[in-house]
Image 1 (tube, rainbow, N blue to C red):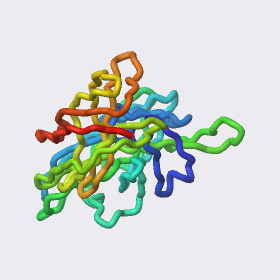
Image 2 (cartoon, rainbow, N blue to C red):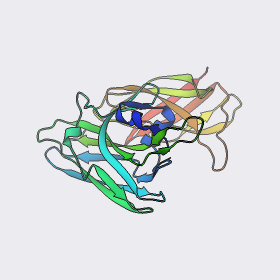
Image 3 (cartoon, helix red, strand yellow):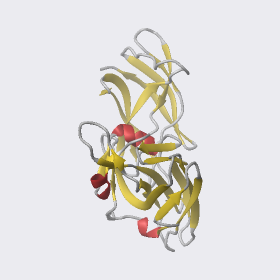
Image 4 (cartoon, rainbow, N blue to C red):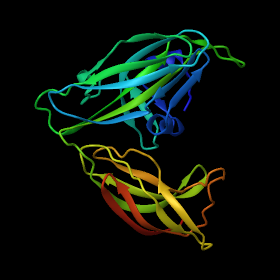
Length: 276
């Protein structure tokens, strides 16, 4: 998901809206084109297992698609997922940050036009680290600002955040259904399940369930690809699965949903009616 930020904003904690969060947390590959910054990055996120006292090396691929050499700054950041699903990044160390365990290959990088660079980083949890999830972001920031077009000319740059989740010592989620409701999302009533995570690592709902709306239409539905962080309760939308080349189906409430949502090898039964 592309986005451009003013240079001044890049030096301070910054909140991205929910649509940008989706790009950072779900889709592949990540891409940003902000005039002087044009890059694709894969994978879009890392979900790995780590062992206390051992180094775990991972590789991020950066492809520069600009017409001239690209100059980039790479650094780590802490982040929080807000109630509205926006993401706040901060270079300040959070209270329980695991970023001191992270070693990055280099802080600045030059990539030729059209070239790819395999960027290495390592996570080394200290010996004796108890089961927990190490969570941080690798930020790739363009150092070639250009002038934005429009009524006000100002320098702009861009950055991409790649989220890393490292489960240490067998840390795992423990998801449970708290409640169901209908909420207005993007101006439309939408089925929502509230899910609590009692575990010590993030989890995601997956799978397909069957919906029947007020018109009697059968709908194949699926949960939003949203992380539910350890210790949190989060609202997850259940949406009709769009057929290729067609817009999403309109849902006529009341709506009944039956089936099993999944997280890892576990199932979360859902049999509920949704009405505004």
